[in-house]
Length: 148
Image 1 (cartoon, rainbow, N blue to C red):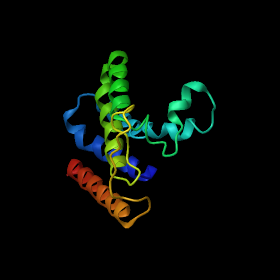
Image 2: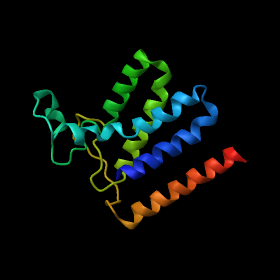
Image 3: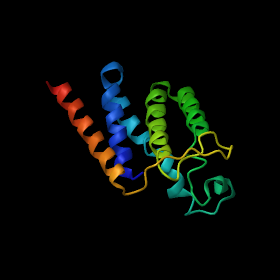
């Protein structure tokens, strides 16, 4: 999915859970930032040729970082270091994975297993644009609910 959808989904999830969290100032930006973290493999891996980055390099690129194995592992590390950030990190990261699992490329949810979950949405399709519009409308409704 495009970055715009991940941004909208991150904002939506942050707004949705905002009324029930204690640290709102920390929660909101962490969910939004974490919703972009799985795509770091596409940014970092092609640029460097380090051996440690080899798992990130493949044809579809959505294997290593686009897995719930990495999501849960990183969430545990975040929970040990900064417990306040663990829940928003997990929410943002996992919602990114969910929406990427709906694409034709899909994700490998339990890396290093090669099993792949794929969906029906292609990049730039009407379906993707419709989902983007619906999420934007849901965000508007949430904002209006908080204002009034």
